[in-house]
Image (cartoon, rainbow, N blue to C red; front, side, top):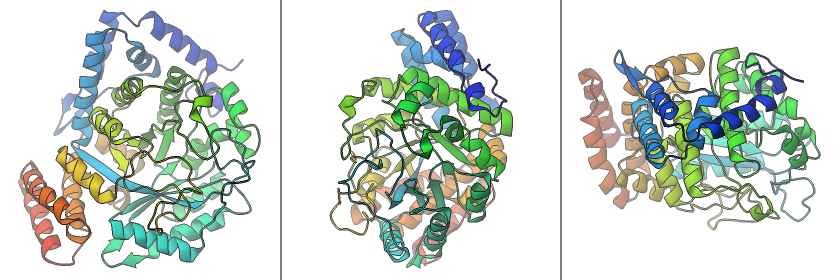
Length: 482
């Protein structure tokens, strides 16, 4: 039997089933232990550190106690602490991105995804490089600067050479004042050599969702195809880091298995990356299972309601304070608004989950990976965020200034990253307001920019950021960054 060891490179050691089940038993036994829960909240709260702050975070077992908490007033304190930590590390900035689906050809048999190989009626598509260009121009014309590219696993149709060619095409396109400045990649688990090729291509974050950490369920949900190999898939982030990619993104698909099991496994994976590589996950995503072509979420019996979903987000934020947290257009406007307060720092906007969907005037549905709940345009989402007093940020400066991996984490964990991110967010928002925003969005945006510029604490940074914003408004000069 495998023994729990976060420093091991073997999946069944660092995602250890016995440890997870003992953790869940421990959490259930202490769900009404007010003294323990108060001690954990005290441990996790932000503390001043130099010009910033630090949070201790929580272990997977400690955070599981918070998730299991059955005391209403302490649950409210968990939410309050999550809000405090979110503001301490990320302020009121929300990073914007869009997914770009390159191909839905796939050889796997995943039972929860419409791209599975047995689905013979879904329209199969793979973008040519000309089609990639047209999609990217459409995304640039919305105002996007950051993409997450997606492709099914098919060694013949979607080899690494195709992915690399698409990345090169995306970065090469400069349309009017538009440019994609960061390409994140969400493709199947692969080899160290191919991860090194992705690194050399200049990707930002490598994202791979575990779907479920329960090995028994994993094998049932992935009955055929290379993704059936639980260990190879679960150990992918180690190979990515061995290949030089120091920003990686984790996630599970909530609704496939019991959420408390997935929560503990997700945090154990983060602890493993810290223990082995010295760098935890750059991002954690929290997708929920949604309806799609030939996929009925009601056939899965582990769905979670909105209140439970909100608590999961809050507890992840408390446990892993430094990580970026992502919510997609799988969720509707109300759910996303609540999640933003509790820990989410990145959202997609104007998203289409079809291959070739952005070039079409009407949203196509024949090759969607999942139903999009929030179908608002990027402009509507940007305006909505600002009306909620968030700063929509199109910043990619850290990636391009070499602030990745342990360099980013050291700045983030100390709170020093705010000195860069706040002015960068305002400058990239200003680019959006000048180049892409509707008049109505500009009316909301410019007062927010002026108000937030005045809040930059460092006088020199404030003056320089204000000067750059003035330049953006007066000319075609772009891409200022700290």
